[in-house]
Image (cartoon, rainbow, N blue to C red; front, side, top):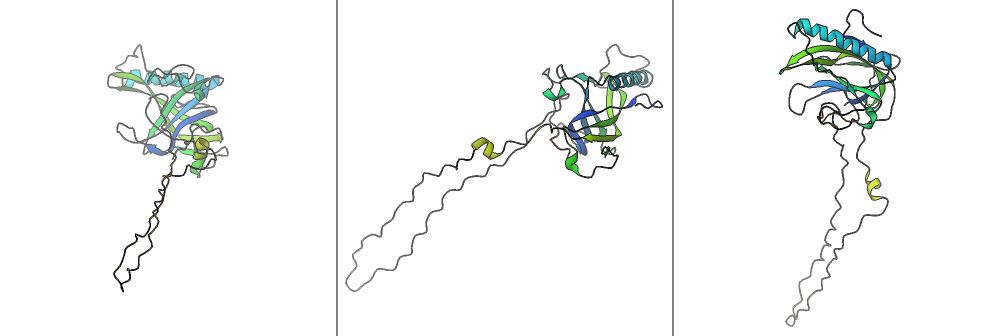
Length: 249
């Protein structure tokens, strides 16, 4: 499906979502305004969606020629779509396993342009735990040219609507539970031994009684510190910046 009135805007077939920040905008670690964002994994078997993406990028280049590139399309235009079977442009390392067999790109929008998220029946999704990295769905995106810091290219931006079509295995997870690391064995007990005290044998003068003594309070045993699970840091596969979690909240 495409928008004939706006050739730079497309609606994908079913894709998989990663690094989901669709419910709450996330700030860049280096500062700057918060943005809603998501990484989109298009299966290479979906040839029709890839053709629509390529056509939208070409249309964005023509817009760039007339609007921000001084009437000339540069010979090398940076585009936002990458081969998930290749390497990340941020560090030259291979993409994650979930990217294999997919085209990979990210889309974002400003804080005053929150995406509208619906389910397979087009009902608004109210439960935030239903929106997470690893779910499947469709998304509307818009491609637009830019010229910034001497670099000319085409960016990808969220175009309001996101549809979740079905659940998928969550990408990323919490730290292992303590019983996974340490098993069911009891925690080792401290080797500290309570010292034994004896009342000294004091000889008192005739007719005097020693003052009563207070029983000694037992020393408290040291407590074991509780281990709090920590969420692992995630990194955007394209920019290499820390971002996101399992859920988009």
